[in-house]
Length: 102
Image (tube, rainbow, N blue to C red):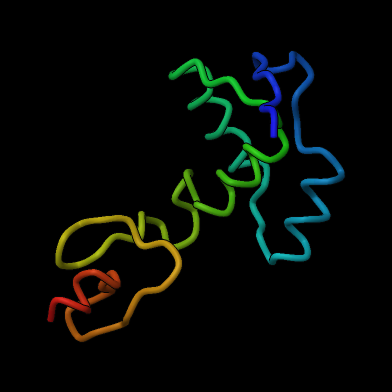
């Protein structure tokens, strides 16, 4: 499968109807705040994407803006990012790797 070419941020980029519908189905809110943080990161690092909507959805899903709990969700043992799967323990959230090593 051939990769689509990446592009610079479109001048009129914003929260599309596609992103709004996706966020509503998934239960994500605060889209304006997520967009603001996303745009700052794009500017800061010069990101280029083949799908800007998809890139924003990933940023919302992964909570780049850290709006979900007011802080990033990290493993209490190793400090790594918690993604799909984690275990709540007395010491806090633990990633699968640290749980397996316990």
